[in-house]
Length: 639
Ligand code: WT7
Image (tube, rainbow, N blue to C red):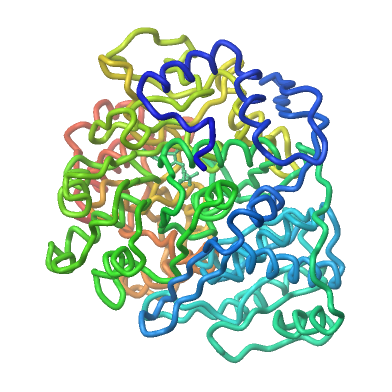
């Protein structure tokens, strides 16, 4: 049952890698031939990184849901596709077999059609982690609509920005979502967002929390009522829309170093092939195994390794509604025991937070089903790696440290579980088809080993982004203009004596807070919206659990409010309104001015050193407009 392109030894990896670099198009064409196509492609790859222009499997036609569902029905119809564990351990779990998933996706595809959704329409999905979220995503793909999932932690303002950017006329949401002890009123947030989005024609609301909601006549309908209509009409199978290889599959918004988040666009065939190939090989998925990725489908990790990767491979994907620490810090381990999870894929921030509870929550839990552990989202520190290895893997499970990005569609650098060797805090080697290189500030390629530099990728791979929605120039500027003919990742990395990569973190003004990407400019814009704020500068600092914390230096001119504690709270609320609670600064220091050059540029390097608690390393300040300001800021630093 394993696919023929599953790599089963270190030698086979070497061999596949060499082949993939020698002739990438032939390599990927061979893998793509194992999928279900409506029409075979004519040209495997057409590309240049100048525009950029990247097209895979040109002329091919397919539907990704046929590959994720229909093609498994005959042999795996009764196999669980999705197992869903609710937030509250007292509530019953749910299982959807491939057959049941097929029926639900078809039903909801009819609902979308009945509500006017057509091929190419953008549909925004703002839901909690319930099976209906996966069903909604797949139903969009089935009708050929472009889904744009927005994580449930984003504010009304953020949603409105994204709806406007994507010109999304359709929304799928829930009354509310359960997350730990919290109950998030999703529909009410959508209502606030829609004040600024009169173009939205239809909001489909799925029942989850029974939180009171207001349903606007003519615009809002209930998921359950719409399903009933489909049942009454006796509609069953929904013939999958025929899609071109390069038709957009989804948009996912992510932060950059400037301004508003950008809509990363992934297309159908290349993304599917890459999500599947990376899933099968990195985790070494075996038939009958249970794969548990703890991410939210609101992030790329959930798209690729809860939905598309596992389902395209006929795997069983476990979907969890809750959080690792509620009702207690043993929640993950209870789930592993309950379902005999084989693959656990989570984030370093979750591991560090659980480490803080000691080993008591693990005691007496049977974790012997675990075969592979994975991490993603940020560099994993050695201490967390060892804890994961010892206490969760019982020194018996390979850990895959998977480096990738929203833009890459799937994992680019990682060891392959049990096949190639792990090294703590190293993502190690690139997957076949991935050609990473390090460059210096001037774009010169850094050859050899034991070196560090900015991480770029040299040749297209099928899962890479194609554009940023509605603004191709922004895509070019962001990723392809820094270094000639290279995709620039925004990360720094080092390459050790054996050619293994260790990702050291962002080299741009992007923060990584608990594995979530946040632009400093975005947070500054939000803080500056507060009436009393003149200007602000935001930097990251090392945080024990989150990886990076957000430190804001704020020039504030009062108003009548002079209690700094209350002002801090007002600023936090402003940021929560503008972006969402996930972007709230951990520390706010009020300053009378910011360190600037004579030309008015904020010297972030200095602020970063102060926030990192290393004021001794500030260096030369003589070029500053007002060197005294540095002394003032240093003396007021918040530890
Ligand atoms: C950024 C991408 C890819 C899914 C989750 C985040 C950092 C990601 C690792 C890792 C070190 C990592 C990078 C990257 N990152 N994985 N294994 N080791 N850093 O997706 O929000 O697009 O963020 O996360 O800095 O650029 P994202």
